[in-house]
Image 1 (cartoon, helix red, strand yellow):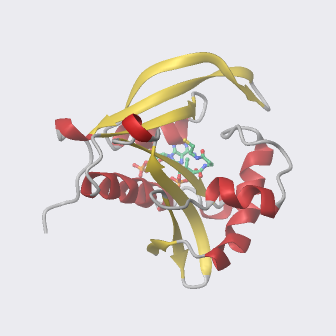
Image 2 (cartoon, protein in one colour):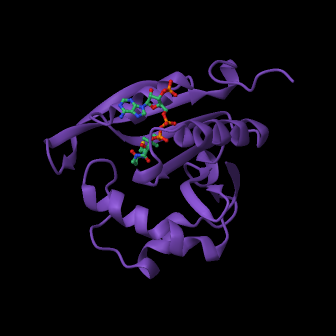
Length: 172
Ligand SMILES: CC(C)(COP(=O)(O)OP(=O)(O)OC[C@H]1O[C@@H](n2cnc3c(N)ncnc32)[C@H](O)[C@@H]1OP(=O)(O)O)[C@@H](O)C(=O)NCCC(=O)NCCS
């Protein structure tokens, strides 16, 4: 598996799992039923943001986007979003993309990474981010209308890169 910057031609391979994950109604609050053209600018970031894909040969296994969480005076805190093709989940792709985003943000000089809306019932994601050093700062009650569970909380999760805690690449 390789992680590389996404190209426009990758979008036709990302969009099917982007739309399937949104349609599941369990993890993301994007509007339902976005067309490929409507969803493209919401996932394929322009600088200073960036979007990457995890690929295995011609297959796109997953994608992550990252960039400043806020413009201007909030731009020293990064954010990120992740979608792994359901057929490739549970095989380490999400962990590799999470580590990639932490490495990128640290190298780019960000002071921390904030995930704004991690659905509290998304235990795979919550545990993965915690294992990378993120902690839950607060939970906004009932902020996500889950397709199965109804109104559930959204965690705000944060990794303080200045505290030098959390995941770091093994020394060479
Ligand atoms: C959440 C998501 C990014 C995780 O990526 P993944 O490739 O499936 O996960 P990985 O195989 O890298 O597993 C990483 C960790 O997640 C946890 N995990 C994965 N699948 C899990 C499951 N079904 N139940 C519980 N924990 C699970 C484990 O803690 C695992 O740790 P390990 O590496 O020590 O085994 C991915 O499933 C996904 O895209 N889901 C839909 C969209 C989404 O939820 N995005 C994130 C929003 S914050």
